Structure formats: structure tokens, C-alpha cells
Image (cartoon, rainbow, N blue to C red; front, side, top):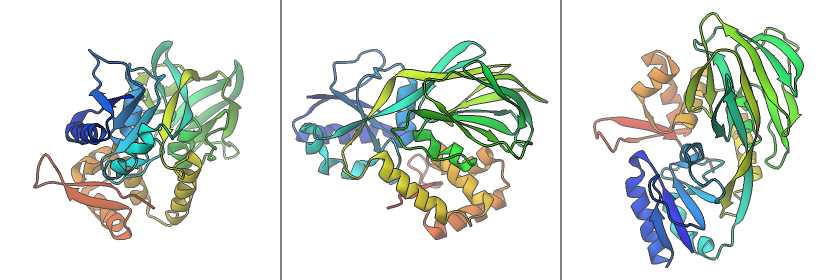
Length: 332
């Protein structure tokens, strides 16, 4: 058995740790690079959910099953193993006594040009928050609505528990052969999320706003759009290794729904910080203020609330010991 190890940014030390654990278990491994890749049976991806999304956004072999590993204590849907517990599961990996989930992806075209496929969602918004965007939604060539709203989200089943759920969309089970479409804060109060077959062609056309509009892919990258976004099912699906018996998307979903119930009474600023940390990973207080556009005092109070409730933890930055960074705490 031979395993590839992929990580970027601050994951180099973690990659060495993973390689040592694999070596001690008698498993051959190598670090993946764009220039030189060896044949692998599977790939270990560091960096949590964000790292997994980044991996599939790159031009790597997406036919291989991947195991996502988080370097902190943040649980996720895509990466549900922590680095500190990896050694206790390495023999399960070695004996290949794991399950592989196929996670559907969305292929995306912006103004006729292909961009990378996404795992979670495609969101279209005005470049400035709280500004209405006009658009026409078509499914399989047939017009469904012409709408004025804050934006629109197209989500996969695994992405349905992320941004789209926050916008009022339904939660989909992983094995559902569907995508969902949510109009965010539409002026039409009767507008409701819709579910379409995953072999549908989804087109968001005639996009316009007072300023330009942007497409946000998996909450990571932004692209300017002039008129049209097209979404279709992308093949092959992503293959995710599950080592834990209780680490299926269904069990993770149950935990997240329970957490959502607890968060209903949370102030909006605290919810926004949690969502930002979920998508972006660990951030400083200054980074949070810049990304959320909230006043420093509001960020400080929201962080205090989240720390007290145990939803967020604070630690010293590896790069600068004088600086504190914040990340989501693991919810058991």
C-alpha cells in the first residue's frame, strides 16, 4: 500500500507527523506535488474541511479516495479525523477496513468559462452586502422565477448543512440524488427553496445589480460575473474515506442539527463570526473584523460570548507568539 500526503501553507510539520506514523506502521508514503506524483492507493489531505476543498479544487487525481485530517480540534463533514488521533486509526487504514463515500460535485461555468468544480455550494451575490441583485433562474432551459433578492445559492447535499442552511434551505441527506436552490432574502415573501434532480442543468441568467456581482465558490474564491452562471453535476464525484464507524455524513449531520438548535438564540454577530471561522479556518481578531466588516468592539464582544459558551477556542499564533488566533472548538 502506498499513500500520498497533501498539505499546503502551515501544514508541513503535520505532514512530517503523518509520514512518521505511516512509516512506523509499515506503510509507504510520499508528499504530493504538482510536478512529480507517484502512484498512490489513497491520499491523506491535511488542513481540515478547507484543505479537502482546496485539494479537489486543484488539478490532482480526483479518482483516488482521500482521507481528510484536521490539525486542530475542529470537526467537519469532509475531514473527521484529528491529527492527534490518527495513530489509533492507522491500522484500520492499512487493512483498508474503511468505507468510501462518494460526494457529488457541481461543475460551474461563469459567463461561459469553466472554473473548478465545487463540493459545497455556488453562491451569487452583489459585490457589496445588503444590496439587491436581480436574476432569472432556469432549470433545464425552463424559467422558474425572475427574482430580486440578496442573492442565490445552489448547493450539493453535503453543502446543504453549511451556507444554504443558514439561509433557510433544507438539510439533505448525503445519498440524495438532488441539488437545492435557495433565493436569499427575496422581495417575494412566497419564494421558497426548491429541490431539483442532480442531473438537471441549472442556469442563473440576466444577473445584475447597482454594482457588479460575484460568484463565491465553496466559500473560498470570488469571481466577477457579468451575466450568467451555469451549474451541472460534475463527474467523477469526490471519494471520501471514513475510518470511524460513527463518522458518516448522517451522524455528522445529527450533531450539526443539534448544535444549530443551541445556536438559535445567539446574537447575529456571533453567528456571523462562527460562519466565517467555519469557512476560513483559524483567524485573528483583526482578520475577523476585516472579513465580516463588523466594528472591532462588536467582534470583541462576539468572541467573548463564543469563548464563554465553548464554541470557539483561543490559542497563540505559531507565526507570532504575541498574536492570538481563534478557531471553532470541536463539538462532541
